[in-house]
Image 1 (cartoon, rainbow, N blue to C red):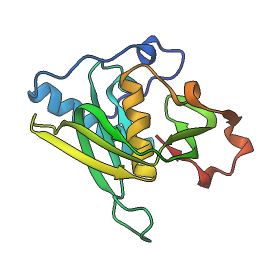
Image 2: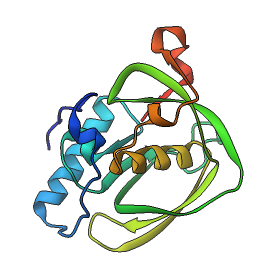
Image 3: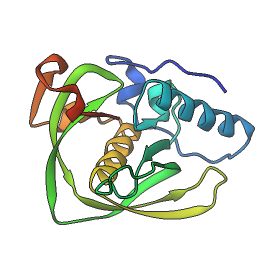
Image 4: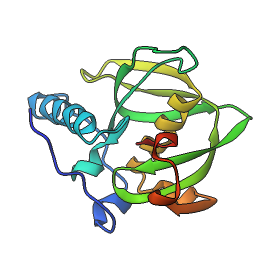
Length: 171
């Protein structure tokens, strides 16, 4: 396992649509392990392959299933070829940050519930139902796979020194 460099704007890979994962071989498994380690070291709650300069449709997310429970244990999700197949009608504003856009946060409106379809790290199909911040993280990371950054969706942007750091999850 290795910690990979997180690419920052204006790196061109962050603006490109990533390629579908078709091989779940050792190279892919190494990428996944490196992404998990990189996400944890940065520290973030999500990471998409383009952020570590790999044009593959894979994300890693580590966050509690239910963040309303105090001290809820984070769950690790590894999703290849993720696709949001259902969203709630209800949306909410939330302040987001991004490891690839340092020193900036923004208020982004997102669905409060999503259903994500994809494959696990071994290629097996899976479906994830997420709500709250977990749903927001999935939307943020899947946007990365399509070359979209939170700053493209933000209604307002701030420099991080203007916002209390504890109010922002870095994704």
